Structures are given as structure tokens and as C-alpha cells.
Image 1 (cartoon, rainbow, N blue to C red):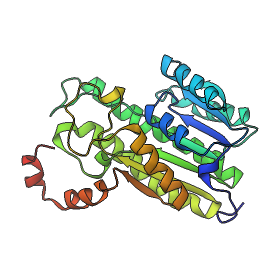
Image 2: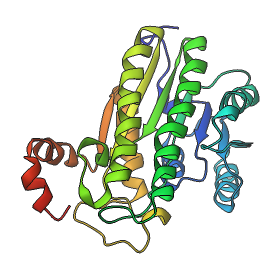
Image 3: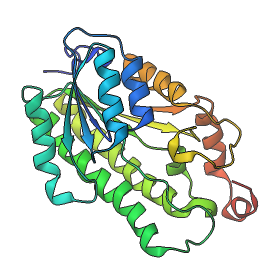
Length: 257
């Protein structure tokens, strides 16, 4: 199916959420137009968050399935993604990739093993799941993948170097795959939120331009409707990041970012 002939991704009926307990992914699902017969597969490690997401989807009129997957266990990713597609009849219209951990904040990490795990989950694990999702949609010749990245991917900073690097790797892979998949009728939308008030950031100092999951969801919905390849949340972060990317490294070291 060609990109032009494909129905709007915002009206998707068959959806896979990788990182099914994500608050941002949940907000995106709630923001999508209600579609009769919608089915959603929630993928991730079994958790109260995924159970709550399944209950919320049922209240919203969707049918929810669950498939267990661990981002760190790469050898199981292909079978897990194929199982998710099988529950939807062999394909998905929309995949939301919402895998990520924040890890230790501060300058040089005190726990290097934990820092390496952030890279393993956010880059290697999430990247593997993105590749498997891309394979699935390329074979089908249609679909949209939403990748939850971060503005942290656009410029490394000392305060959270490992997280920035991990998101930069995933962000770059998503953009490259978007170019590779476009001729095959598959679109990739990279979503770059700033600081989002969620469970993951609870207790951290809240910076300017912080937002909530609903703000990210609305930005994502607009991106899906417009056929965008990248969106920022809030939108003005796009122009702030243009400036930050141009700053000399010496000045970046002195900024409280």
C-alpha cells in the first residue's frame, strides 16, 4: 500500500505499544480518535502500570492484549513482536515505541554498571525493538511508527551525559530508518519531549518549559495528522534546541542545563 493511499495513522485500529506502561504512551492512546474495534497490544515487563493501562483501554472501548518482553533480552525481541502482530491478525497500523529509563543524574556516573544498563535499555534494547517493528511494517508495506525520543538526544550535557547519549543513539536510528522505510509505505515519527512530569521524573527539580504527558500526546497527534517526521513538546523547544545546538562546548559547560 502506498503512503498516499494509507488511512491516517491517528485513526489506527491495530496498535502495538512497546513500553505499554508508559504514561506518555497512555496519553497518546487516549488522545487518538476513537475507532470502533480498536485493538491494542501492550508490550513490556509485567507490571501494575501495564495492568492499569489495559483497564483504561477497556473503559475507552478498546480491546487490550499483553505480550511480555524485556528490552534487555534482545534474543526474544523478534518472537515477541511477531506474537504481538499475530494477536492483531498479522500486522499493525501503528507502533508506539516508549521504552526508556532515566538513570543516575549528575556529572560523572557513580554507578558505571547502572549507567551501562541505561545505554543497554535506551539504545540497544529500544533499537532492537524498533528494528523488529520496522521489519514487520516493511513486510506489510504500510504503517506508522512513533518513537519517543527526547530533546536530550540533540545536545549532550554533563548533567546527564549517559541518558543524552542513549537517546541520541535511538533518535539517530529512528531518523535513518524513517528514510529507509519511506519508499516502502512506512512512516516514522520521532517525538522529542523536554522534561515531562511523570513517574520517571518524580522528585526531580522541574525546569522551565516542563510539560505533562497530555502535552506530548497532543503534539504527537498533530504530527500524525500532518504527516510530520519530527515533533517537539512543547513546540517552542524546537527553536530553543536550534540555539543550544549552536552553542560552543565551552559555553555549554558553564550553563546550568
